[in-house]
Amino acid sequence: MSKHKSHRIGQLAILLAVSEEPGIVEASILSSDYQSCIGRVGSMESNKIVAAIETAAKKNGFIREGVYREAHALYHAIIEALHGVTRGQVQLGSFQRTVGLRFTIVRGKPYKEEAEGEWIAVALYGTIGAPIKGQEHETIGLGINHI
Image (cartoon, rainbow, N blue to C red; front, side, top):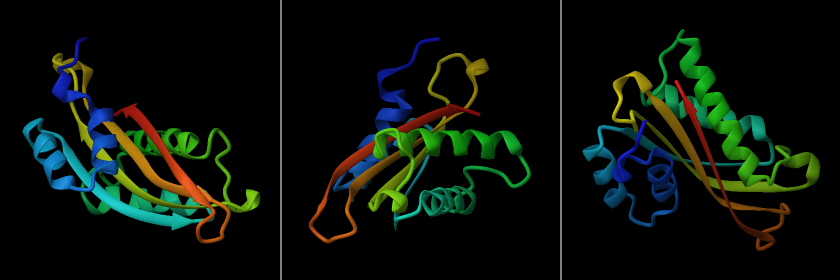
């Protein structure tokens, strides 16, 4: 159950989220037979962040309609990433804070052994803070789940 260094799905998701030149990272992802997409979301409500990422995943073919295990894996990866962004309290507006995030989704097979199947990673990078311009700081989160 070993991974190739170039096949670290979480590392690729994070690099894609923080990169100022995502095309370079995307080339590495394509050579690894992974799917990837990038999006942006800003909100004071965590459910809107989940919805934006789920919508992007469906629109880009990361999860298939009616296949519960795929939607379930994506949901858990999103929530895990949100825990990193919010430091364990997946609440925003009720704590008077807002986020502006770039998100990435990466799906693929990071293990040599075919039986290990597909995995999905969600990376979030951006700012979090009081809903006052200039009062935010950087934040990052990563969630990985098997499909």
